[in-house]
Length: 305
Image (tube, rainbow, N blue to C red; front, side, top):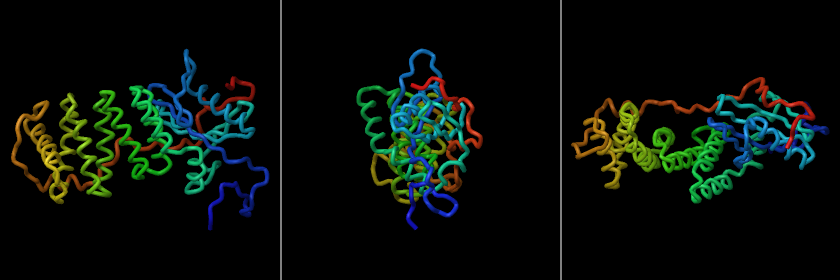
């Protein structure tokens, strides 16, 4: 049966009093930077992120003359809220079951106002202008919302995570870049080994910049397991990939900050077994809160825009 974006009543008929399903998204980064519908907000002063988000969404509601739904991912408190914001500036938080039903209908409605490719183009434009903080926050918002909607293994989610890893590398945040790139490589190793090779190479490039020896050791062991698995499958066809795999082995075995000389390649059975084991992603998507977040509720007449 075809999916409809029109709300239905208990008899599966169009709900006559239902409002159009206008859907936005918002994101609060750990440093308080705020994104609404793919645009970084300039808040100025000490304006709280929640007020900036509500004002921006209320502006959409007034322009459209209808309540607007929004999903807010707030990394500063590791929570997700679903909102309904009205043209008068008031807002309520709603439980997931009060909103669109989960599945395709919600995804289609959300992505009508959430074109990922347009977001990617904006991120790249910021990066090209060396506006790396803006690019990084926007990439994080894109990755978080896609992961929430589609899951971490979805193709768009993986591409967004890879972009975020690249921008973190450009910013000199090699710890974050390594973690993000390793997650992409880890998922690829479980779903498509052929496509895993360049992802493991990108993760290795970021890992080689790490200085913290505990990070070097733990991340390096996982990279080594990945390279050995790919080698055992006969997938290391480029000399550069053999060199990177060897570099990881040397650095791990010798304990030097950077590799100095090649060492004979080995493929321990234990390493292959570890590579094949399931490793959970480190940034598990946040679950929506059942009762919402009080700071995203606002009475009519409060500041709106």
